[in-house]
Image 1: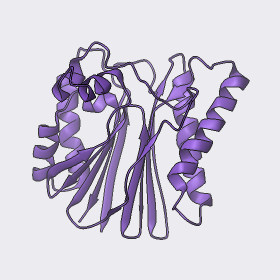
Image 2: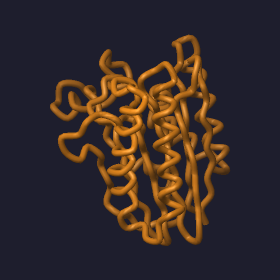
Image 3: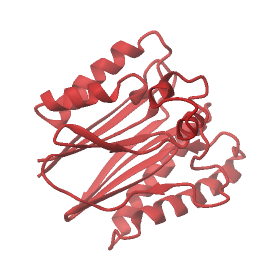
Length: 241
């Protein structure tokens, strides 16, 4: 059985440029999270439009085999067209992370630094890799994974929706088999910046539900982030039990 919980908070910013959504039909569900970039409301428009398109595409789809490719490719085209109409090419951008669970399979895709974490029986198994300068430095061995959260260039993204692509800039995972004991966490950088993977695991192992898990993690995020001009922070928790 699948259960889920989700929230999006404004943090200490004037606007909430994060956007989250869940849609389901028959034996399939999609979870979408986008973190808008650009300020002055442009990032908010970008994230909302991209997530709305993802929800619409899911409604239209009869098959989910190419859903993620269509989401990123056509969502990108729509966003670039909107930029031209609003003369906002420099501002209207967004990250995007999407998880689709259809039947006994799950697959996800992302661009930017909004993450998806996969846990199995309470232990972290994998996470998406950020399309950011610090993640690139980790790959080259110049810094460690633990340095990403405090690196001065942590907010410098190399790939996002709304930037011109020379090639496909998004990543799509291999399909995995859904089974009892799996847990997914999708979250914006304003969330994962203030909670370590160890705390994600610890709260997961003591949580009674997906909602309880998110509630415990939110308290940690708020405690660690208060007074730091906290960014918007959003999270989606999905349990297979």
